[in-house]
Length: 271
Length: 293
Image 1 (cartoon, each protein chain N blue to C red):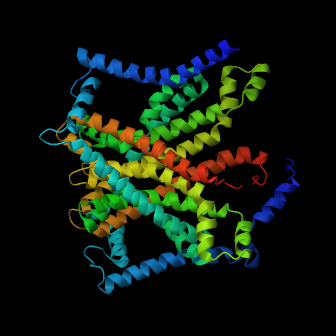
Image 2 (image 1 turned 60 degrees about the horizontal axis):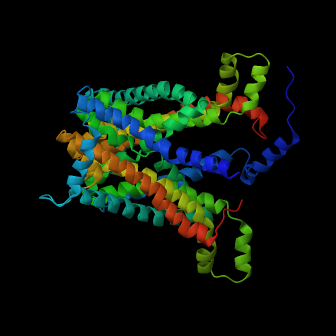
Image 3 (image 1 turned 30 degrees about the horizontal axis):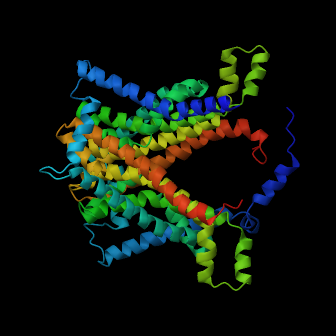
């Protein structure tokens, strides 16, 4: 019994940790060896072992003074500002569509007018209106994230039980109380799903927008600038940072928010 | 030919799903709905037009709808060199998006079938895929710019990367969700591997496959805009929009944005919607309540 469970634990450990480590390190090792041996073009494919020291040097305090931190800081600043804006505006519009007749009448056609436009197509117009500025990239993040949030909030309201409103109203709740005690907890699981999906889209749009419209900082700007100097090591390091941060935002950050709110408050999706 | 008998539940659920509005105006309901739909859009255009005419918005920075329509008219129908240019842009964009999509389908669907049918291989490959998945396709552009330079090869590769993962993942999901029993049934009746593949696996993962294709084409089209802004040499709708920035030609930008949205929608509803109707709805509708039409 114990031996069987120990063997099960061993197999579980092997599957959870060893398989990813081995399957990721084999291609990297092959790349390293081929690059060192000179079989792979080491200008286009610099050995992976040279990438980490390079990024470490970029983040350290030298003459330039920790450039990597500024790139990450500006990217995160833009992402979080745009995402916050999109959450506030998206929730409001979603609630108006879900609860009021005029909101549905006004916003639904406008949504279906603007939704098929690829987000990044707005970049040149925003560049002309705002200039090469944080505002342009923040607005791109806002546009990329808000549709998903609106759609999820509307779905959340449509799935709420109308009896909950009746109960609240019959016990004499004011509209403000209904908003904060009934609507917000009711749509919260959907809202967080929307923000989670939206943050994924926003991160992708932000990297592209930074390539097109950032002036001096941002991870997208970093890799695009590096391509002009043909600095492949920085590009690969930047790609690794972008993948890592994208993973952290979508899984770790949004997961923590989910635990703090939905699971702690015990709000459940009523079906 | 005997018509299949509709189950009672289907008819009941269909009438229950019909909106009360439809019953009040049986003939004009569609028109009324369309007018209700268009009213806010028209209101937006009128307010925008008046704001520009009234001088609240500078017309050289933000042109009015009438100026944009005039520009679209000139680009589309004037018999000058400009008309050729617009269709050249559209053609270049379509060529890139479709060839990237075709490439991703050719590679991702066989790969998805292989990974879906062989769990052992999937176990070892999935960490690599999940590291590559959160990377935006556009982030590969700098590497490709250094490797290939500007031009079609870079753009098509970026769009290919954008379309590849949705197609691959929905194929894997579709193949893995096929039950073992149908396969066993076909095998016990003496079916070969070819029979299992063509008569069991392919039809049952068709819905997932088609939704993957739809997503893949949409991603390819959306990635295209950014890729063309970064890496196009002379043609493409994304290039047209971005180049118009140098001349402060906002009307052309709006024409380009409207065309991007319209072509994207035409592909999604015109091509893939019809494909879905012809295949998935037709084959799977009979087993679902209210889906038999």
